[in-house]
Length: 338
Image (cartoon, rainbow, N blue to C red; front, side, top):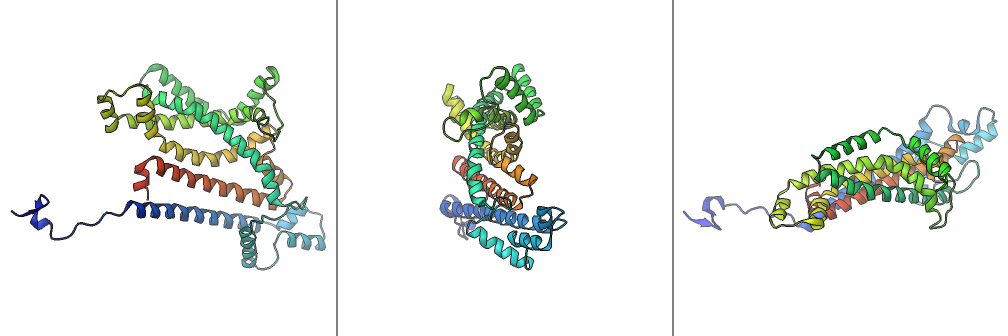
């Protein structure tokens, strides 16, 4: 029987489909992720716009209080952009955002852009130190849990990490203040200095309080990924070639297991922004979380809107960057997560 390239002739009457070029597949994947991120940000902008206007009661009255007069109420509605049809308000709101204009504070008339620029770097420093602590501890711990998973001491460590998830960050923060701040007097219990590196000493205790929640989660994900990686064929091949020591643990166990960790970090950044409100209040750190809390108490709604938009956009951006890092680190993610 005639054959073509080792196949029966009757199976070769139709040309085989041409596989997509890797470059075009990567471009489609990238555009898809970018489009989703833009759609999420647009949805966030719309929800933030509607929350203020569709909530029960007049936002201008809520901002002024019960004792007001028609002239002050009209002026407040003008400042808050509440005059005119809802669609016209939305168009003006979008136009301001496209000019990167978040508005002005109702109380101080200060630009919200300036407020965010003043408070946001403190929170970013806090998140950087928090994730630095968390990854430094959680990745080696997860590697240990994943490779020595059947040992008795490792199982006890798993139970200890799982139980630590039940300790809220504000409680662990108070314990850290009592022990390391008041009794041992090693670190300041509150306040902040904006100059580097003197600012780091004020961030150690709040970062440790937040890391107490992150470490069990990240180490568990690393342990699960390492356990699955160990059973892979390429690891068995490495063992047959007598690959041992740090090369085995780092290149064959850990590196292929980091993709889910990067995806998790993109998600946990958003959770950490929310937790920063509590942490910054407990440790009196002047970050974006404490600024948001103060704006809510004082009913300064434009600040609340601006902070929520900036933080939400930052969370979407962090998830997008995590997807890009996954694609660069794990070829399977790049090829099939489309």
